[in-house]
Image: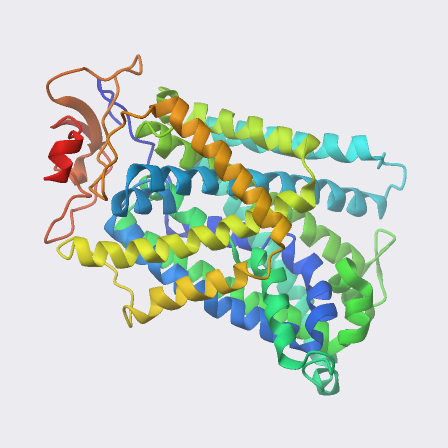
Length: 513
């Protein structure tokens, strides 16, 4: 990557496999281990229907992400797309909530890692300290470790994600391979509980939807992926497909071997209980094979999910800083490592504070709610861009338009209704904080664009843009003109960076015209 006076783009170090593993790694976190039994408690054997339907809901929005990521190859994910479709304040709210969602998920995954790590070590060394302060300390160590890895090298963090995610997929497939022969069809009859019937699937879907979040993180690193207009859509759809198949296999084996009643009684340890029941009664260094396997898989699942959200949260902050939605320093790239180090550091601080002090259940519910609302807005952004910018190059297009994005909007909002009103109240409060931050950063005189291409106002090394004349920015050579403005054909891919001149941001009057 060349050095220039303008802002540098992130290093392009991730391939298709790396990008796919970021999505799978974020989606297959601790959710499949702890939510299977809770879903069975709500919907009985119908828990597998809840997982299948959530896969469908996820696919609608994933298709929208795939189209937008190919058409707007910018870091930031959903924030970048909403920035192109709607006004500056709407884009800020989207970025503000997505940034929070990823940081909150990071705190959840860090604490999930520490709990599972203690369980795994206790199988072999019961003397490991496991009091609450120690649990938090292990979680903080995990956050700091992955923050350091991401600050030093995108390639290293992507490679680590690939390896760790592959390990946990193998663990889950071992679980399925041992259990499939022990599945009993009678455990799926009746499919739904007598009290509530098929309607119990809806709250079970709301409960387990958090396990389907994560593919959107792929879009936050678009500029760091080789051939993004092709590889990002493939990675998004592949990650969803692999995750849904793995989930259905694991949930099906768990229900079919243990039965919905025992699965519900086991609660958060349901998958482990199922594994202990059907796996060979042999010890692994003195621990039961089933329990050791699931504890091992849970540790790797939470580790890969934590690494993925460290990547994603920092890229949202980086994109917002680069476009002056947040302080411009967050949009800087480290001159040696080619990583958005200040955005990584800022995200890490919030993640660490949440790990230590935040009520985790509340944070988790907020993350789910903001994800559902954010996904609905991304689908709406796709519809708006189709109408307002029909000539925008779209290397990948959503099939069955507009049915797919409309279903994405409706189903995400429907699931949001099953989240508690207390969570909604807290979410409104957090949005209020965002309004204050926006006003402090931008003031009342900020020009509110109406869905025009955002461009990049640029910044000098000191973080200030010139007052007059063209603004010098740096974009990938492949996107020589503004690659996110309307165009009739796709731009070639490229990794080098160079300077281009763009006009200064338009005034309110100019945008209105």
